[in-house]
Image (tube, rainbow, N blue to C red):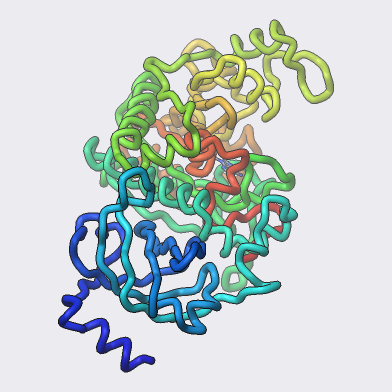
Length: 455
Ligand code: 4AD
């Protein structure tokens, strides 16, 4: 079998087969190609077996007939088996459809790895009605599906678009550590572990490290995993998520807001301009409309008024008052009603972290911003940072954080302080908005949330 195959691959009478990835097949119409991939779909019709082959770069319809289907391997072929084949690329006939508008007429093929049939057949393991926890156990198989593949491909293009935006605007990428000994967003969501006999944590945010390199690199960003020991299961919380964080130096609050708007709109435009990402948006979220500029800018106090006027209450059924945190459900209701991105600004100091700068003349409120989007709610949290040494020391005290472990962060205010600000963006949340996914879990390769760290 093997020897016969090799001869046929190089059979001069059929022409030398050019080994290629599937994405390039349409350009090779009229030539003989050699392909490798997984059987994505399989259908027998009269004297032909139709295989839609998949290799991670594309899909190609391949037609087996004649001697090619007179083998046991052909009779037993199953979905998700790996195969190798040679054949000629032809345009599909008028009125017929196939990926790329071409099909491969196979003259030789061989089975590389057979996937099980029967009870263990791939098609049977993940059905529309498969229970959620089994689906989660089979994430490695789910990732082979068209929807998950599209989401992951889009995710890669999204990250590329961000990196291009930052490159063009001279913001430098850094890679801060994930193992840390200080908290950024409060102790309640820290994952703790033992580090050579000392206490350490998985990072909640790289913000403080980004701030320390402003004097050397200027504006900086990172795309790094953050970890939160969230103690509830929601549509938008993961225990590990991809956190895109940026720190910008010598700016005012207005500059931070303008930057956020420009970055989000530029990335949206780039993804709509790229044919691959544009096609994915069209398939998964056909009603997507790019946000119009300027974004709605709403003061926290006006949001409280909005909630009251629209009967959106707190979880206990009472009205929100100034000083209240706006919980996930209320925030989403408001955002869905307004139905466009909102920059919610100027949160009360008591709700916010130790490092946030207060507003001149409104000492109980901060120069802070959350970007809210329909269907998801908060995707970005950012602020101007305290630049004054004494104010920062007061911040530690107010929030009950010992200042000693933060000496390196404090030093930034000692050695040439400056106004600066930044934000963190939840990549999975932004994806959930873009691609209209019900939960951020669909936007993570292997999502981690309370009780789940497998596979
Ligand atoms: O609002 P957060 O907690 O802000 C910070 O961590 C700042 N230190 C960031 C900064 O200024 N550099 O988190 C920022 C964003 C949120 O808006 C949300 O999109 C995302 O991170 N996020 C989560 N995403 C998924 N699962 C979770 N558990 C998340 N927690 C926060």
